[in-house]
Length: 99
Image (tube, rainbow, N blue to C red; front, side, top):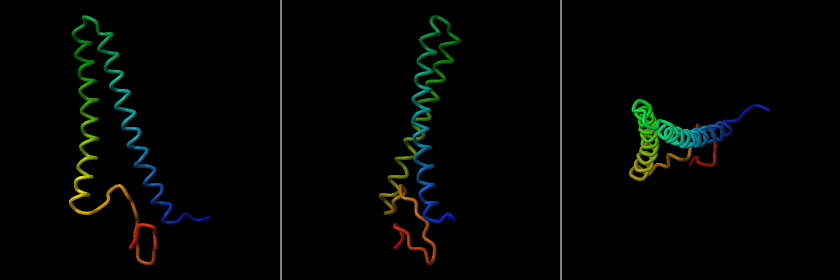
């Protein structure tokens, strides 16, 4: 059975959803790892600096992902476009999101 264009929409939505889930899991793991490094550093200044960098980068990644999501939602509100719905509308194709 050949693939249809509507299947590509579903695949794209799953990939984006999976990427966002992986980004959230990665941030959580990095925060835990940075906290563990910080606790295990004890009085070692070099270990504490390394742990602080890990925590800083994890929080920076979280801020980056959240700000991208917020910007897309704000642009969607102002432009009247729903960026959370991916649809391919070609001539002759009548998908669920095509008008």
